[in-house]
Length: 71
Image (cartoon, rainbow, N blue to C red; front, side):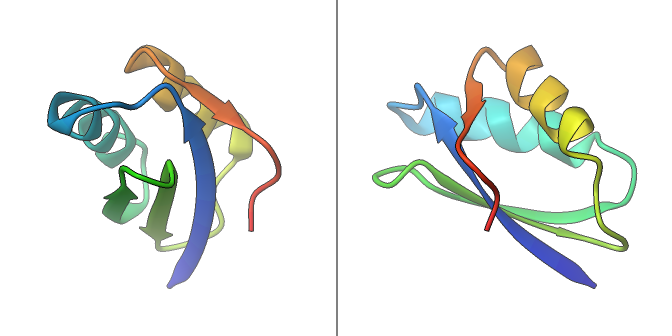
């Protein structure tokens, strides 16, 4: 399993968390998504390393923006 932390900009409420989580869970290989709303950090656990573009596209589809470097 691989775990990466991403910064997502624009989330302000539980609906935001649900939207981002739902879209990211649709990315092939994603096993788990944890969102920390106050910090904007999203931890994604996957079977294999994910393509950053796929993660960014899922976050964009939810209406938010992936920012910064992944940890």
